[in-house]
Length: 112
Image (cartoon, rainbow, N blue to C red; front, side, top):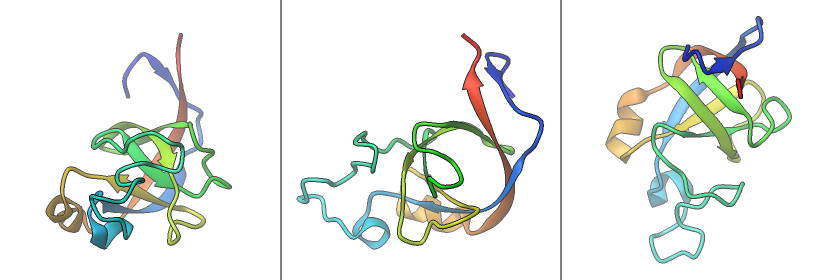
């Protein structure tokens, strides 16, 4: 974990999947006014954005994903309930390749 972040001791075990901004993943076409926009109002970014159940991980929370790094909870999804996360990827192909994984996550906060 990056030294500039502090983490609690207890991980959260989640089922992780992946998505991108394509219509198959989001149901929104490129001409939709909310294309690429997350539930938090930010544009989704690969290597940064995850979708969560805000009852488990509040929107805006920074999360360390086992083996992947630091991400931010910025989106929600109709299938993302309970101990699930959806990780935003660069492409649909990359999301498919990711598949489904059981991972540990830790809610973290910047150490500044």
